[in-house]
Length: 115
Image 1 (tube, one colour):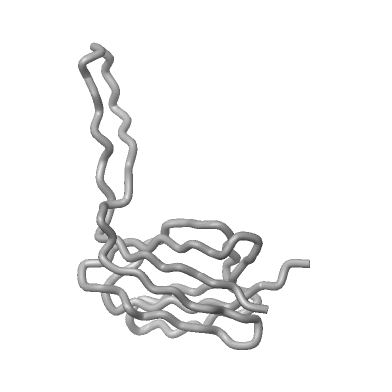
Image 2 (cartoon, rainbow, N blue to C red):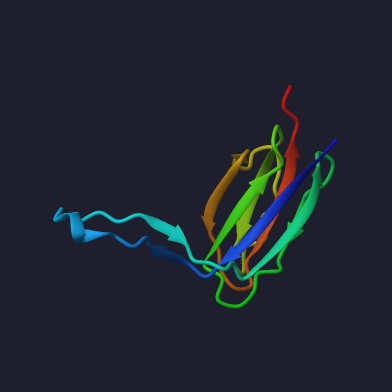
């Protein structure tokens, strides 16, 4: 079995525009991923060996990770000088999420088989 994982590299967040013409005051803001994304990568992951991805373009600050529907993966994010490989004790992810990331960082995935 394998799971496909999409990794989208972003330069950061931006605030959504607020229409104040209605006369309402709001001190909150909605944060959105800056578009367009800087790059993308897709990897096939299985339960036998961890797969690493390190193709983050310059100025990457965040990654959006999208795991194939119905699948789950274990992951480890590694800044420079950290080399932890995903294993059965690593954080679990399914669906999609945004995570902190940076230049020269890597991410390691391992498929988690869900019964």
